[in-house]
Image (cartoon, rainbow, N blue to C red; front, side, top):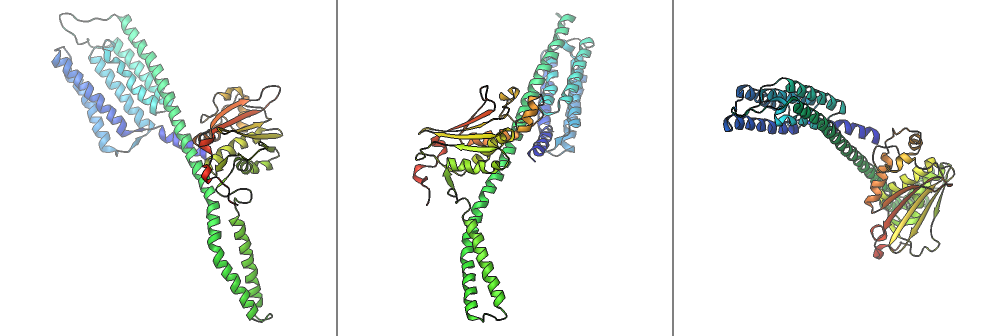
Amino acid sequence: MPKLLASTQRMERRSLRLDTLLMLRWLAVAGQAIVIVVVYHGFGYPLPVGWALAAVGISIWLNVALRLKYPNAHRLSNTEAATILAFDIVQLALLLYLSGGLENPFALLFLAPVLISASALPPSTTVYLGLLALVCALVVAAVHQPLPWAADSPLRLPPLYQAGVWLAIFLAMSFVGVYAWQVAEETRQLTDALTAAELVLAREQHLSALDGLAAAAAHELGTPLATIATVAKELERELPAEGPHADDLRLLREQSNRCREILKKLTSLGSDEAPFDRMPISMLLEEVAAPHRLLGVAVRIERPADRSTEPILQRNPGLLYGLGNIIENAVDYAEREVVVSIRWTPRDVVVTVVDDGPGFAPVLLGKLGEPYITASSQERKKAAAGDESGLGLGFFIAKTLLERSGGMLTIANRVPPEHGAIVRIGWLRSSLEVEPATAALPS
């Protein structure tokens, strides 16, 4: 489910809002018009101003047509956005043809449509637009009207200089395009992964709240159920033992007793081993590790012998999910045993999860904790063989939730000849522990 959700969100984010593109195009239109007027009227340079203003007018017409056709919040499809950006490249090429080609310093504006595409559209679209811009730049370098300049001292730039300008545009387009795409892609991935983390946390909070709802329901139902049981007993005493309603009354009493047993279990949820809302850190880890002990791998909890100063934690869904994911990953690829050790001082609390599996693939050690990389057990084994096709969302979510609780993760492999992975989570005790005044466990 998180994988499908993240994939859908990434597809939605790979689109361009019409409002954003129109705002940029209006800025471009205003800039082009101002430059034409200043060059022709301000400097008095010769320029085919009619054709130039006609090219700007076509852009204005297109902006108005797009605004009338689509609503404000419309997101352009890749084809629509690419078509508009391709028009902008051709329109700029026409203006440059009328005003000196690559001799015109505004030739660098070929970068703008490609940069917009790199930040919002798929890489293939950006490549096509980049090729179109380079072809247009090559054409206007070969064929163009003279550069508007003073008639008494015309400016003539050598072809070698124009070739250098074209090469500079190509290099800048390549570098800026790749950089913009990488930054935008990392931002999209991080946003998608954080959304998935929020959904997981909401689910964990919902599941955690169910225990409280069950206990509250048991408390509220206890009184009317006791009344029903009392009335059933009184009716059994009053009515004949072999009367027509004796069996019904006996069944009613048995079922009321059964309901009381069920409510007793609901009331005791979370209180057999620890208090309902807070518990020592060792009990919290026992709760997290318990489901994974059924998978054929021993999960051992190590703690100091002296537990008089053991930290008392609030039962936090994010903390439970984060620690559970770390232990689950360790169990997934451990051979025989996972050891979860707890150490605490007056200042710090440290939980270390060690397994005896193959360890983290070296290619992943520097990437773990980032979204959309291979991180789970089977995916990690694939990555060791060179396959990095996994998502790694689980570890990213766990890391995010643990860091929200104030923890800091460090990841490493065990030192040979031992083998396996080590994940260490450390907190400042003051950021993790329940306030001393409220930390006493109820009896």
